Image 1: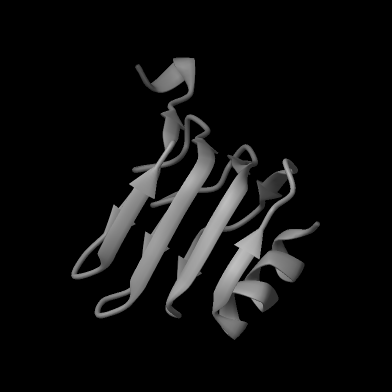
Image 2 (image 1 turned 30 degrees about the horizontal axis):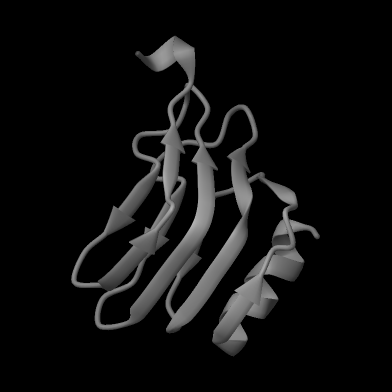
Amino acid sequence: TTQEELEDAIAKGGPVDLGGQSIELTSPLTVNTSVEIANGTLKSADGVSGNLVTLGQGINVTLTNVEINTAASNKHALHAWGTNLTVDGLTINRSEERR
């Protein structure tokens, strides 16, 4: 699955099962639709700046068994402002270069 395919699935809303895949994000991922994302890894490519994943205001997002891996260039792994966020099994790994 590519980032474009992931963005298309998220735009439709509802459940998005990543099937254990690791998806490289080559630009920040913005979620503006209520969605359930499960079972996979979102990994930043080198050079992606800002927040890696941003969740929009007034939506419902559930992250289940999701790992977010950032690169040194990312400001934050996950930015949620005014989002109804539910997590179960969320892991966030920061690049060693940023620690």
